[in-house]
Image (cartoon, rainbow, N blue to C red):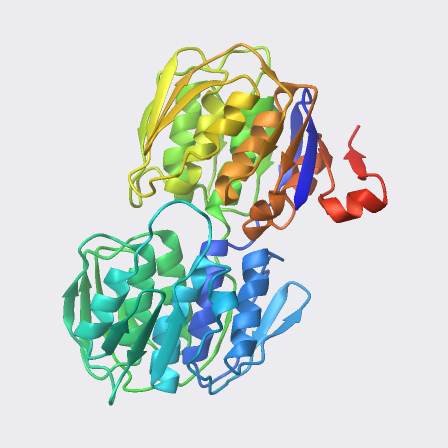
Length: 437
């Protein structure tokens, strides 16, 4: 069990750059299997989910190679069976449905794991693949998908704008025979980014990033490869911005795309932060002596709405804001499992299913809390920046699924954070504490 130690009370200052977006990198690693040519992904962060994806690629016969921050994907002829232990480690294993079905003719996928956010069915993935001509055999704990010949293009309407299902069907349609139209598709920036990569490899795609996507199938694998820089991580950028709102100070988030987190930046302005945004960077400033303002009534939604991954971050900002606030998450039933940790630090919160109610308090105090999931863990780390004393966030391995080194990034901006170590390491020696300033 990893843990992170944070001593509150320091304002933040400096510049920080988000890494490549986790939510682009993971489907891009899977999409590389569709290609007959070599692919290179640039600036890939060292994340637990990336490590699991590389392990999955090796398990199906690919030979990915990490060269510093880049990942090389040579052409391969993968097999179609995904090991249970790997599939259970991350939700992103579902991205391999289409590539393995296309290249191996069938895929056996144990139901994927990931954060404990509540039910995340893959019925749209499977229904869409069936519409393209796949045979689907869904069991209690695994699903097998086969094709007798080439998948066939189709006109398909998603019952809701699922990011994962949109990506699955986009990849499948690229290698099908004939034309496919996806209606009601998700529009998140990461989908447009994957489409850019696929087009570099020879795919013919129009409308990615809009509700209607049209794909002219290649009738087989994509003929080329690509050298690709994934988009910057908008959730990491929002995390740095939220940290400044909580702790106070001034930080510039550089080499990013502020438009990708416009809804979150609007929320921070309403809460009392100063935001100056340009094409490729933005600056967040908050005088720690000035109050934050609550009264927010936030609902998460599909792009370009308020992103579900930023809901716990917004909650961390509102814990000491004046007034009552409410956040409703439309996607996950257990998004606010972090509320228990907030309460342990003295926050007045109440989680009721998809809703979180917040009554702002003046002060927070240090506590030992447990990260329930990736974004909830990040929100607890941020909250501790404003708490009196030294907090410990346990089970912090969740956080490394989406951030290469969030404590180190915050420490570089002036926070007092601790290097993550396992409890077995702590039993052997004292936990190393990194304090800046």
